[in-house]
Image 1: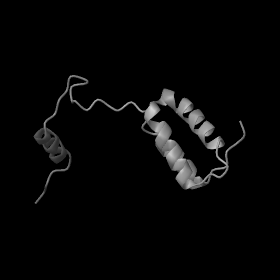
Image 2 (image 1 turned 120 degrees about the vertical axis):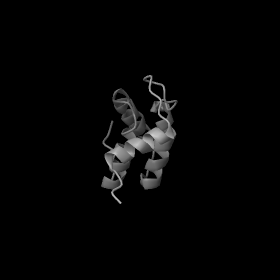
Image 3 (image 1 turned 45 degrees about the vertical axis):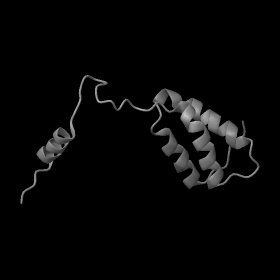
Length: 91
């Protein structure tokens, strides 16, 4: 596969898209993205964004937000109390 010329900003978008993905999915995501971009004649920020947006859902596993994934569940008041304990109000 030929190198794909991306600007620094476009590469930052690609790297940022990898951040929420599981580490074992980075390589496959980047390969699929490269295949998608290599099909295009002209590459620009809009095209890179659209390519990322179309491929990203295939590799993203959303986190479990039910609160009991590890057996822990926190109420809003517990979270606020823990924030206060870290940064107490001194007024």
